[in-house]
Image 1 (cartoon, rainbow, N blue to C red):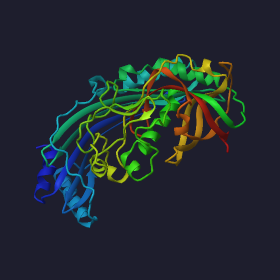
Image 2: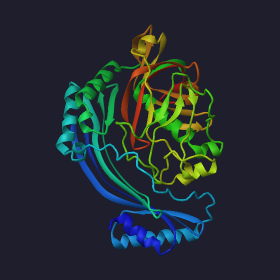
Image 3: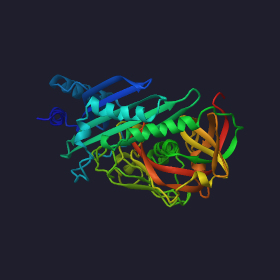
Image 4: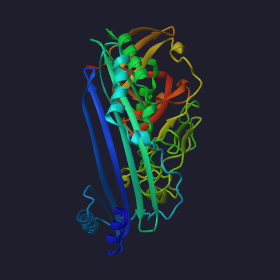
Length: 438
């Protein structure tokens, strides 16, 4: 008997509706600093999550003690917690037996990757940096997830993910390069190291720049910061229902150059193809040609808003809603976006970003790992890091997206533990409010 079956059997005696998710996986990490590997670690484990609904009340708990005693304790304390919870009037029932849409993107070579395999990526990165000091990581993950509920619905999926992220450093600058894929073999350590080194060298000895509004070219690593914010706070049906979202379905809220899709079934998608409620995932077009066309639903928000779940439930989603977890910004036709800048900034990266107003998507944060002043379509000089306060929604509004790059990059996402696929963007205006010091 599997652990999921065992838990459902224990719950059966209580008469509760129940769903169990069992995730087994290994995360392996090879880190380097000062241009040599200083840490190689791997962690394997199993997590069992139980959510049940009994006597009109809902509770959820999890455990990593997947033993008979541990599973019994999980059931006992979840039932006890349910008795203390208020009535759950939003409960939408369990997902009925449903045909899966896939088994997940799984690469056996990545699942079995050795420390030497990851070290080879690191070695190529360091060698390609040409003597500059380097630091970063290469990691691989292999996950098997099984969902089962007391309505007779069972699904199993398996996925892998590989990522590399590193910097090359001069005395006055850092250059970064990062990439992700479901296959470790897709990560080109030499190309990443050469890119990071080139950015560090061209970014050396940066100078100050007066704050103000500048046209910008955002590289994919910077664009990758925009998409999770828009998804988690905007394209979230609970946020829409509670009036916290900017979303206005059917309206032209973005430039017509913008098409944003959440695509969990793409060949590059990491993660299993079903959500936390066992709903099989499908591609969801959030924005088409600038028009906001959909939001992410779980069963609870679908019931609330008389809609259909889109397969975006996440653990704890009853509190903060359903989340798009595989954002893909469709590429355009731009081939040399910098050449289109008369006077503006080329930005590599954003970090330490915080949302100030969810309904306008005003965000504050800093640039990182390289900023350059561009004049007449040519890079003139590097610029010190800048602070910004900018509405992401305004930045992508009709008329403000001047070009979308033809090539999309797949980069690791620290928010959603997956990947983001995005091209570079040429935007008409970005509001820089000061230097990194204040």
